[in-house]
Image (cartoon, rainbow, N blue to C red; front, side):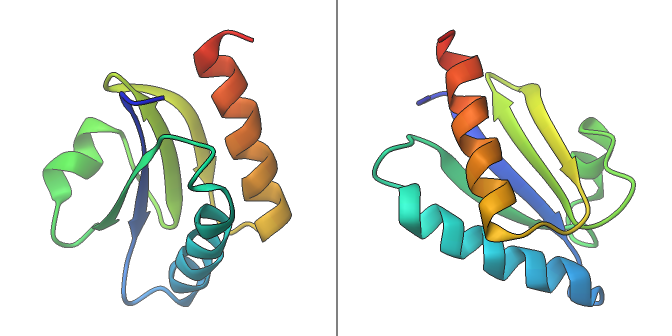
Length: 97
């Protein structure tokens, strides 16, 4: 998944996106060695062009992108088990398994 990345869109003014950022970081710590995903955290107020490129209309929004194409888009908050399952499913989808 070397051409793949997780892009997490958030706002410092939105408590839900700050909670989701913590959950995502913990989940990535658990599986970082297994998945080859770059991680990018984007404050929507600082990067409006990137938000427009990926049609981000709210926070938190989590994208898994492969070669600039959205593979998975998750809107809203999530718990650790949800994001871990999503990452594993997405890895299989990208690898074609």
